[in-house]
Image (cartoon, rainbow, N blue to C red; front, top):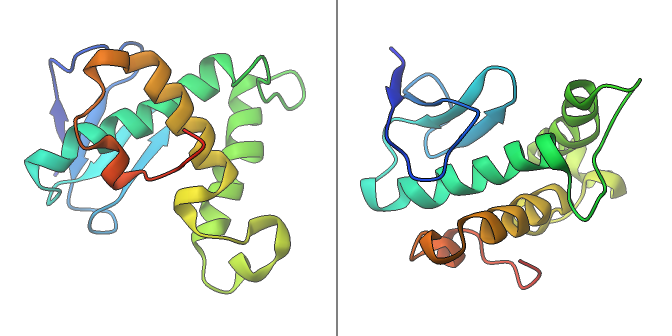
Length: 139
C-alpha cells in the first residue's frame, strides 16, 4: 500500500509517497519515480526527512555548486550511478568498510550535498528540527 502525501510546501517536480514496504524509518529519492518514506515515521519527523530527500532531487536536477553529476550525458544515469549507488553502498555494513563508501551515513558526501541543497531551497521553511535528524556541520 502506497499513499501519496500531497500539499507539501515548496516540493515541485516530484511526488512524495509513504509506504510500509521499505526499511522502517527510512526514506529514498528515486528521480523519475518519486520520494518514498516509511509510513511509520512520526509526523513530527516527516517534514525534515522529506526535505532531506528533496535535497537529493535538487542534486539530480541542478547539482551542488555547479557540480551536476552526469553519466553518458544523462542526469538520470549520473544521479543513480554517481550519487544514488554510492549512498546505498555506504549503508551496507560490509561494503561501507571500503574507503570510498566508509563513514557515518549522516556525514557521507552524498548526504551533505542533499542537506546543503535542502537548507538553501527551504530557507525559512526548513523543518524546525532538520539539524536534529541531519546533524552535519557542513550543511
